[in-house]
Each structure stands twice: as structure tokens, then as C-alpha cells.
Length: 421
Image (cartoon, rainbow, N blue to C red; front, top):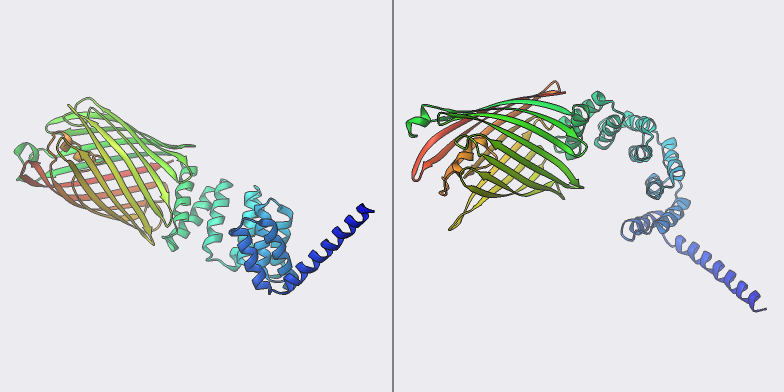
């Protein structure tokens, strides 16, 4: 008897709950239920509740496409693939090429390794919305994943030309380059000229640095081997360097460098460098690291920088700090790039105060304990030609202290050619 009473009460409660839910739903419009579903999903991480509220809203407004796409997205996130596909197809049957539905079903197929189906849905969406940034970006990703590199590159390059502030597109363009051309050889020549204010041995004997390097992109990042030949102070020497740019974690990359030379009158006998790069919200990036130079003695240099993308511009403010016996010397450089299209197409302008250990022409100024003062301004151009060729040109003017309280003018020029294959 007790069991019968318990079952009866339970059924009665369930009936009351069902009735109350129905009344509850009827107390709200489909828009209000949609907002409640979004809050349940995004604020509370309660996907079952979000699904229930979305279904109630669709009972009132079955052709409300935004709600049905949202429901399909939740099904996608919870691995209910068939239900997600049905939700998106329902919208696309009524609104062919619907932009949001096309993006959602493209993501669904792409994430489930159905590249061909993803490409078909993406192309259908682009037929109705040919200028859609999101659909074009997705198409380039799919084509790259299918190893159709030429097509992927064309789509991504066109996207960056029309929307140079799209950082995802620019990053994808770099990825496509790496995926399709994992090897790179470059040759560079740096020339430093000194005016009559400098001692005779400088203005009569300009400096030359010629570098040849080979770079290969690997699963962990780029690895670069480099040989430099330098002619300074009437001496010449070779320097051998290795760089690496490993990927450490999501949003964290590194730069590592080590180098050796046979004559410290031209290059440091040993150099090393390490920096960590952190991707931050709103297109910011931060760097923190150190450099080590050994001539006849050791010099430690600490580096920090902050970068920001804004539309077609990239801004970078970098400082180098060198601890001394009595104080800390410091240098600052502001660099701005204006992108003309892809990652290898930009104008560059820079100015600053002090020295940079990352510039070969300034390494010699770390020989003495006294930190020579300088101010500089520079211009540069980098341009890709037929995808696999890159030309770089730059020039900088420096007002340089070559001895304490003795200054002269220095002009540096650089020419670089890069071939990818």
C-alpha cells in the first residue's frame, strides 16, 4: 500500500512539473527563451538547459534560424553530430547559402575531418556572400588542410589584401607558406659607412657583413642555420649561428640563438639569446628575454617589448637593459610596419635611442664598460614576389658616440633576398 502511494505521489509531482514547465515557457517569448538559452550555455555552461530552452523557443517559432543554428552549435560542441547536421540543414533548405548556417555546418564537417563536405558547404555560402571574411578564412583553412596549397594561398592572400587588419588571415598565410614551402635560403649584405668625424680607420674602411642562412620549418617551429662573414677594423672573420623559434604552448612561442666566432675583433666569440613571446587579448603581444655576449669579457643584456596590431599597422616598443657596476644602461626602439598585404609585404619605420644586441653592426659597442650613446632612425621595405621570393631593403641613419663625448654620423644599409622552396 505504501509503495502504491509513493508511486502515485511521484507521478503527480512529475505531471505538475511538466505543467509548470509548459506554463513557464508560455510566459516568455521565443526571443526571451533564446536569451535565456544563451545565458545557460555561455554563462552557466549548462548545455542540457540551453538545449531545452532552445527547443521550447523553436516550438513557438520553428523557422527562427538564429535559434536553430545556436541549437546546432550546442549539438556540435556536445558531439551530437547528426542532430547538429539536421539543425543546420533545416536552415539551409529554407535559406540556401545562409551565412551563419554555412559557417556552422562548415565547422561541423571540418572538425569531423570531412574536408570535401566542408568545402562544398563553404562554397555554397560564398556563392551568396562572396565577401564574407569568415567563410573565406574557413575556405583557406580547408584547402590548406587538403594540401591544395596554391588555392589556399590565393584565397588567404586575397583576404589579407582586402582586410589587412585580419590577424587570423595573416597568421594563416604564414602557416600556408610554411606548409607549402618548408625550406628557405636567404642571402644578405649589410654595409656601414662612417663620416669624417670618425677616426681614419673607420671612415676610410666601411664595414661589411655578408650572411647566408638556411631555414627549415618543423613540427615544433622554424630552425635556422647561418654563416656570417664580417670585415671590420681591417679584420675579417666568420660567425656561425643557430636560431630556433619553437612553439611551446597555446599563445606562447620562443626565440633561441647561439653563435660562435673565431675573432672577437669582428664578432663576439660567443653569443646566446632567449626570448618568450606571449599572445595577449586584443592583438597584443609581449616579449621577455635575455642576450649574452662574450668578447674578452661577458655582457648580459635583458630585453622586453610590447607589440600591437591595429588595422594595417603593427607597432612594437622594445627596450634593452644592461646592468653595470654603478647603474643600468638602457635603449629604446619604436618600430612601425604598414602592411600592404601579406606577412612579407610591408613598409617599416623605426627610431630610437641606444643600442640593440640583435643588430650585428652594433655588437661591437658592447666591448667596453662605458655604454656609447646613440640615436637612430630607419626606413625599410619588404616585398614578396611570386609567392616564393622575398626582397628586403632597409637604411638607417645613426648619430653614434664612438668614444666618450665624441660623436659621428653612421649610415647602415641592408639588402636581403629570400627564396622559399
